[in-house]
Image (cartoon, rainbow, N blue to C red; front, side, top):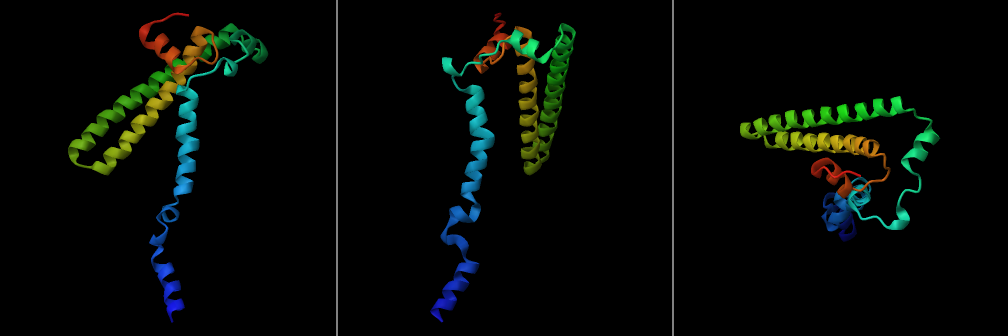
Length: 153
């Protein structure tokens, strides 16, 4: 009888291993692959060994891109970045409205959408900045210098 009750207890009370119950290993693996590793790649300091060996001009030659194509791509990246910034501002205004309406879950979801729109804007503007500066593999600090402080190459 005791053996039967212990089996029933395991079926109805899985709280004996809370990490397994919530899938902690899968959550940690997902966090590492989607958040921590890309953040390290973008924000981390680079060693001299990990710098890109291919220059911008070599990449343009290898991909057979003309100057007209380059300027068209720069315009596209810049316009897409502006579109995402406008979407983020509109979503932020909507998020504030949801907050004052007392809809907290909807506010949280809208705030997540604002962060996603800003991340996409950053990505597009980062690519635009690399094309404008004619350099591959710039760091986050270099991007902020070119974008906000007006540093030139």
